[in-house]
Image 1 (cartoon, rainbow, N blue to C red):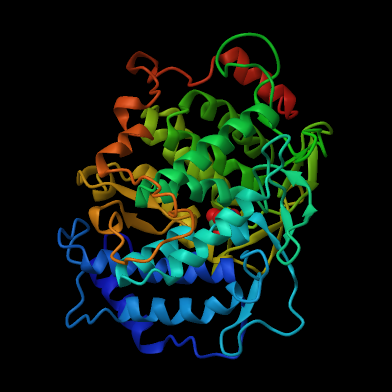
Image 2: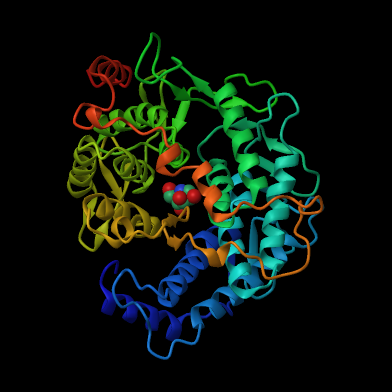
Length: 457
Ligand code: DMJ
């Protein structure tokens, strides 16, 4: 659909004509938000963009139908934020009946704390603070539950008592997008408190989760790796890393920590080379998969794309090509692409997740499409955690409401659009120097070290 206006228009019309949320079905709040709400908002933003950088994506007689649908869906998700003592939402909600009576009181940090981008955009487009207010309250509640000792958050929490049920602090499943959305909320809305939380979190991650040598491309010691630790003590909890954590180098690119991103990405790419896919969990001590399936996840491609944008080093095109070839070789099926049940045996499952199209394919496509308006139009864009494109523009910088969002009681400062350069734009970005562009991003001895560590050589 990207770059093809008639396909885009057809898809939008189909959605408007056929989709209804008035259904007796129970959904995960997080999944419904990032996948459905996010795509409705992204399409609405593209349709109503006055500059139309992607070609003519306008829809004749468009009457904000997608925005109304987005609101309808979000209203149906709101019961998840009621009757919770902490303000952290229930993980599941029935679109017709609200929170099911037997509902689980436990939720993961990422699921409850990564709703702010979509809910914030919706609020700012509608001029109705309700959605941003509940999402922001959830982030704050989780943030306030971080350990006094390490500053880290766990991965599963009880929404009524605020007790951590899962004390694992890591960057993968259950935590990943919480960190991603602290930074992306700041990039989009310019609320300084989001950046402050992100900077704090990033510092604590570096202090407690990062192992290995200090600098990626110099010095002695193991390659840098981010491990899973106990949130209260900082002690190692296990010896696996998961496939979801491969998003982190991409996030590091956004804040300008390109050098560190290069190393972590190289580690994941070595695992990919060994299996032609990423196992869901890889045990770095045993040099073997702990959980061997690969559901076509996007994170490594996402980081590859962002590292290519930051460095323009053709090495990342080579990585993309390699990934593409293994997807074709091992996952292609008659009617689509299939989840790998086992990355060693290459057996398949009859399952293709929606993120394969919205992220894995999109990032691969964009990696090779140098001329895409996303890269060339001079406008600024950001991807939601589900790969939906949103423009970083003035209309999300203003809250049209008068009431106070949680945390604004003390007149929290708002960044002006120009302050964005404080986070990630080229002047401040720790860019790889031009003369290194055609060299390996990581010195060959360090590459070899990583290949050895994952049993490639
Ligand atoms: C995607 O749905 C999102 O990126 C989410 O934040 C976690 N990862 C999955 C795909 O692996």
